[in-house]
Length: 168
Image (cartoon, rainbow, N blue to C red; front, side):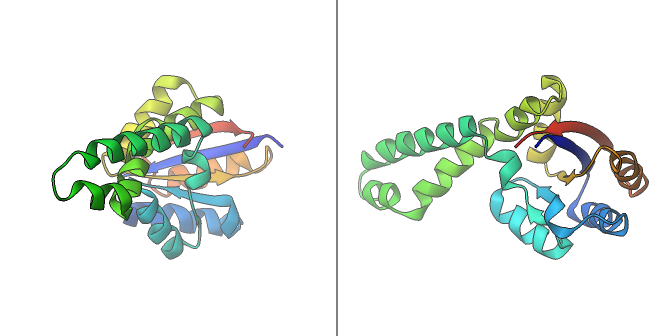
């Protein structure tokens, strides 16, 4: 069911933790707060420290996932021709990591936010900010609570607060 998704951008993990605390103080439960950072491992670590969830559902649109999978195959094929280390890289976790990184960079966050109604240029700006080290807190909320959540995020030091219409 579609609902508002309040997006708040923070300059650092410490600043994002303040935002997550503000969301909790506004009554937002753990599973309604998503944390998006440069990669999924960082998302998971940050989310655990903020009593939130990793933002994988925001980033992992079908398009980005498919691009990541295809990129992984291409990287594995290239690695096979490298003398000595190619087969190890192609068969190992490095190949999966490189494929995930390629999919992550392929526009997963921007495309998911665009699909949620955020203008493409703002969605891409958010993705670039996250790639440069900012942390995005996304709060799944209701129409009636969205203004309160927006105010809490703005007063907690977010450098940008947007609202999208999440149907994921």
